[in-house]
Structure formats: C-alpha cells, structure tokens
Length: 284
Image (cartoon, rainbow, N blue to C red; front, side):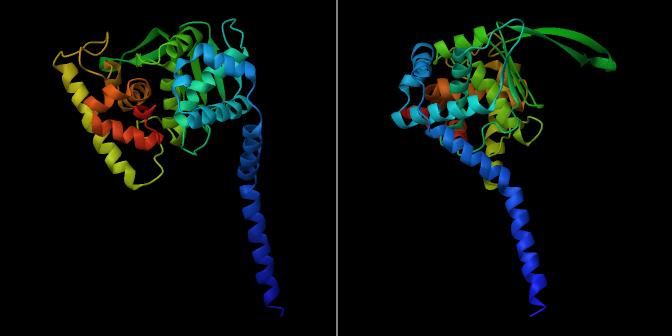
C-alpha cells in the first residue's frame, strides 16, 4: 500500500505539469473559438467589399474563414500608426484580411511570432549598414513599401497596402509578401523554408525551390530580365532572385494573385505552394 502512494503522487504531479504547460495553449484555443463565433461587423464587411475585390472571388467557405481569421488577428495583434498615420478599422481590417489568405485551411498559428504591425502613410526610409568589398562598411538609405522583422514586427506602407488590395491580379501585394516572411521567420531566421508540417516534405520543397531559384538567377545572369519586372511570358519577378527568403515571399504573391500563370510556367513550384498553403487559387 505504501509503495503505491509515491507512484500516485508522481502521476498527479505529472498531470499537473502537463496541465500547466498546456494551459496557455488551451486558453488561446478557447479564446479564439469565442472570437470566431462572434458576428462579423457589417462595417467590416463593407470595407472588404469596397477595398478588396479578391475577397468577393473566394468561395463562401473561404470567405467565412477569412472573416474569422480577421476577428482573431485584430484581437491579438496591435496596429500602430507611424509618421503621424492614424490607425482606423479600415486599416486594420484590410491588412488582416489580406494576411488571412495565408492561413486558409492551414490550422496553424496566427503568425505566432508577430507582436505588432507598424503602418506608415506611404513608403518609409530605412537605414542600413552594409559591408562591401574589402570589408569596408557604408550606410545606405532605402525607401520601402514593407518589411518584416524577425523580432516580431511587420512594417507596411498604407499606400502600397491599398494598391495591392485594389489590383489582385498584378502579382504585387505587400501584405502577402511581408506576412509570408513572418511565416518563414516562425522557426528563426528567414531562409525560404517555412514550417511544412511533415518532415518528409522538406526534401521535396528544398529540391523544387532550389531548382527554380537557380534557374531564375541563371536567366537574370544571361540578361533575360531586369529589375523592372519579368519579361513577356515570364512570371516570377526578378526581385525573387535576391535570396531564398525573398524567393519564397515573391512566389507567394504570384501564387495568390497569378495562379494560372504560375501553374502553367512552373507546375512543380505551384504544387509545392498549394501543399504549403493548403488551398488552390486556380479553383477560386
């Protein structure tokens, strides 16, 4: 009898530890479920109708998913105006709805490392210290439409957010691009290999993306395209050749905005992104 008491105590202790560790996860799931059950405000629906034509093209079940994801994202992620910019419901809803496209059918977290979204009225200037040949460093200044930081911030130009939402077929969407970086950064430094769910998927992902990345860089080296954009008949923007992380983010834009062209020109690449995002924009 006495020998059973320590075992029972250990079992109780183990259950308590598991419950303590699982507590935040269970609480987050309960809170998100409650948020998703709330009615979607009519004013928010009007914002999507006016500002995001891509939303109307989604099947009804995916529209519902977007709206539920918006409710969770707006409850969990702070939006901060920069350079005198004022955050409104239109700003928050339009950004969150475009970001929600990356969450469809995935069942994954809501950009788990994202802590805040910083919104500027237009392009913003960032300063960088770059190292050139011979180890010499120099300061550079660049005007950007968006940026994603591993520390948990997404920076966006509102002018570019509006432009990206207004034209869902041009392959340029700053929200999709920067939030794709956030997915890539969930496991650390962005490297073009986001969480795929299954270990066996990484070998295929790496093989296909490396092949496509190398082919794009080879075409650029041969002068087939320039920084102004892809040549006639091509799909992937030259900026994708910068590094694997940018390749992933740029192709994410093409996947959601130019699925037919991407699938026709790069079928294996399209298939990998369809598996990652668990949706098929060709069917929308």
